[in-house]
Length: 453
Image (cartoon, rainbow, N blue to C red; front, side, top):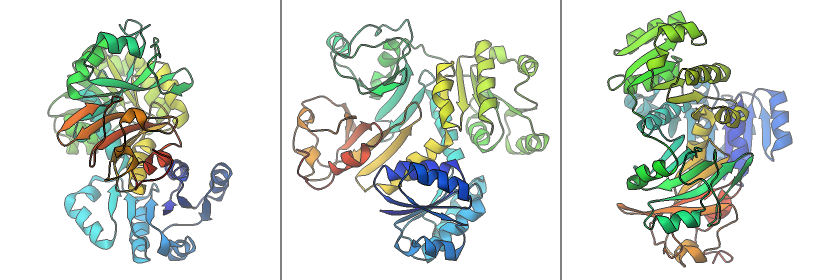
């Protein structure tokens, strides 16, 4: 697939690197020459210095032969114009990043579709809704629903008191005969690996588990997690992410929103009906104490500063807050943040990448999630007729190293993958893949290919 990415920073570069790994032909357009030189040194792609809303630049990028054009600059006006021009110049499919709520209103989306923009994407909206899902299952560190919740991928951190500590997967399978969940990956120290039957759980392991809804309670119990009731929320940052969270939850939960900008605070008062708006600096510990931090169940920091979000969440932990969530934009900070005690990290780049990478794959891909806990993906494939995965039971499929089938969705039913399970046409198959494996796995869901049976 020929893909053009228009960007002006890390989101575009992250997407470019992820898509290059999928063997696409990537052209990245960016106005910053020095940044493009840096990208060229790390990835095999074509770079063009310039503004993507220029017809001449788009023609230089050979837009007429582009299968996909993605515009993810910080300026939504440039993104919108880039996508419209790209479609007029021959691009098959266009995606534009937007930042304001008005642009995502249904009547506006329809107008943009008519102008040639196929998809409008808001990383802030996606991140906000991820937070909302996490508050519905607060014991999880990360959560991703598949097929409307028929299966879920959960990240949990194994506590020192967890009953599974010192037990292998075989031990657990022997003790619990009808498991409704399965461990698909473990992150331990600096290493991520796919477990086998002899893998023994250790304290502080980060474990990705695929589960059926009915397996959730037992899963959390085995991981040493307790149910956390969320009623009172302190939300730091009144930008787009904060507004999405507060607007969605303010009628259900008690929310205090701290915003440092006075002008933005006044705008929030007009937008939010049942949220208490506090104009102040959340880094001020006395302010947190005065606003009742000790009675808060969940503390969510989503300002534009990763450092502020990390620091304020750590303060909240010291006051005994049960659940902390931080928006961390620097990918290098994610693992550090988890290891120092923050419960959940949200990253807008990964949120956007999940959506866009899925668009770059074939129609056999139903959904894709770039995991924030580790550099890996969960992909939901649709098994087509006479493809390699439908030929033999799971145990006899030659899955690429670093990949694992975790679950299957068949109609209204869901199943945890076991060795004798036979995948059938139209099954949705949930695959966990370490970096660089997705392209090889995708071939198993294409027409029959020698070497995969």
